[in-house]
Every structure is written in structure tokens, then in C-alpha cells.
Amino acid sequence: MNATEKLDFLIQDKNLDIELRHIAQKVLHGERVSFDEGVILYERGELGYLGALANYIREKKHGDYTYFNRNFHIEPTNVCVYDCKFCAYSRLIKEREQGWEMDVAGMMDIVRKYDDEPVTEVHITGGVVPKQNLDFYADFFRQCKSHRPDLHIKGLTPVEYYYIFRKAKMNHYDGLKYLQECGLDSMPGGGAEIFHPEVREKIAGDKCTAEQWLDIHEQAHSLGMRTNATILYGHIEEFWHRVDHMERLRQLQDTTGGFQAFIPLKFRNQGHQMSHVPEVSVVEDLRNYAIARIYMDNFDHIKAYWAMISRDTAQLSLAFGVDDIDGTLDDTTKIYSMAGAEEQHPAMSTRQLVELIKQVDRHPIERDTLYKVVTDYKDVVFDDTNKPNYYSLPVIE
Image (cartoon, rainbow, N blue to C red; front, side, top):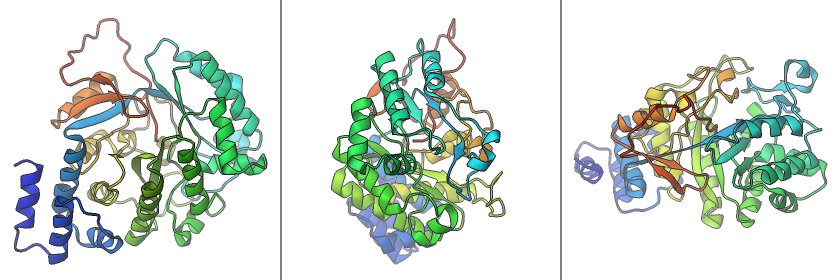
């Protein structure tokens, strides 16, 4: 059965909960799922049911296309003024001898390492320190664009921008406009965590609020930038907190249309102050991806990060609403490995990634940052002669 036939079959099941049947009918007819219905999906939706709905939406939007892109990651520092309880990556200012703090020249050295590689994007995110201020990033953006004008700069999250702009005494719009003029192209989706204050204040109480995070994205959208959005799930939040988080994003997307991808990030419990909190199961991972695809009807893409959840789970996620599994890596990020991600030294060749996608009967597409097709790998035959083993590619967006 195809995705539509499976959904029709599900709706005809006389044993299906009446409210779940109503939600399935809404999905079939392209109608929006309400907040309360989102909670019902979490509370009552079994894996097979959720997969049928999410895959129907995924294939309606993208068919079998599964996206990845070629980028590299720069983490300017892992020292941070903030004390997020779930973070194994950062080191507080008082522990800065355990971390690193790069200068602009060091960041440009990393950019030059990829001069002969077909990367399309540099992704920049890390900790927050006073000396990496507005002038610091303006200088780097200018130098990066001057050196490689075609390289898309996806840089920093609202957590960094809120601190940088406040220190520079600039509002969000003017600060982003200035950095856009210096070369900034788009913004990743990190730092969202959970928006609701009763959770946010417990796990990341000293960083920007939900309202500030959303405003920075709104200002970016008003300047024509595309951005991503994330959620950190599977810790101390309730199901309704996840729906509240997605609802705030969905409302902003209704207004601006500037978000490209929604990226659920799994809480990993190693090396930080929340290590006592157990991780959720793979089944819950897949349920969460599926509900995200069902609820976030105005987001084009749902992304899973294979290096965080494992290659096998990433393959499974492609049947639960996910259409983007990030890309090949050459171990350029420590953010997730330090928190206990499945891949401690993530690296996958383009061939391996393409085969991973094809093994579950999906159609691999290399994209650029804005989801324009770079290479269609459906019928590509790989010739490994004189080819590099690994292509440097993304971290979260």
C-alpha cells in the first residue's frame, strides 16, 4: 500500500479511538491539528498510527526525496557565560582553562582548510564570551565572504545574538541588519530548548527568554533571512510543553514564513548537571519526529541528526516524517559527542550516506542551505578512484 492507502485503511479501522480517527481525517484533508489534538497525539498515538500520518504528509510534501548538504562547522569557543544544566559542551568563564577560545585568524584558518572541497556552507555556533562581540563576528563575516564569496554563512543562534546585541546597545533588527551587510546569510535553530518558562527557567534560566528567541528570528525573517528552529525533548518536560513549544513556532511561521526546517534534538544525559535524568527510548524518538511532522504543517522540512540518534534510527525516522538527515561529517563538532551522542567521532562518506538513504528506498538529494538541489544521487554510480574518504559536512541547524 502507498501512503494514502495506508492512511485510508487506518481511518477505516473500527477499533481506532474516535478522536484519533478525527485527527487522521484532518490530516487526510490537509486540515490543521489543534493544540489539544497535539497533546492527544502524544498521549494516545501509537507508533504505527503516528507513522502512517507523518509519512503521508512527508510524501505529499517531498515524495521520497531525502536531503543532506555539504558544510563544515566552526565552534569559536566552548567557554560560556551561561550555565545550561543540560550542556556537557560548554565551560563556564571560571573554568575557561578547560576550554578553547578562537580568534578571527584561527577561524579563517579553518575556512581555508576547505578551499578545495565542494562545501556550500559554514555553520558557526558555540559558547558566549565577552570578547567574541559584535566587532569580532563582523570582522570574521567580512573576511570569510571576501575569501570565498559563494560560501553561505549560517551563523550563531539567538542565545549568542541576544548577548552580543545587548552588549553593543543595539536592537535585534539593527544588529542583524549590520551583520547581514557584513556577510551573514542565515541563522541556525539552536538555543530554543523548551520555550515554556516553567521548564526553561529550570534548565536554562539565564539565557534569552522564549520571547527574545522568537523576536530575533522574526527580525531575521523581516530582513529576508531563512532560519531553522529546534526543540530539546525528552528530559523534564511534559508532553504539553512540547506542543506549546511547537505552537509558538507555528504561529510565528504563519506570520513570517521564514523558517525552513524544524529539528527535534534528543536530550542526551552524559557529562552535565542533568545526568540523573534518563533518556527516552528510540520509540519515543520516532513518535516525536512523527508528531512534529503532523503538527508543524507550515514547516517544509523536518530534520533528524544522524550523528546524535544513530544511523539506524535516522533510517527509521525517514518513515516517520523526516526528510532531511543532515550530512556527512568529519568529526568537526563536539557539541553532541560530549553529551553522549551515538557517534562519538562522527564521519560518513558521501557514498555511505547515499547508500544509507537508498537502503530504505528513499531518494538522496544533496541540497544547498536554501534547499536548492545541488546533486541528485538517485542514479549516481560512485567511482572511488582518487576521491577523498570523507566530505566535511553539517551540524545542527
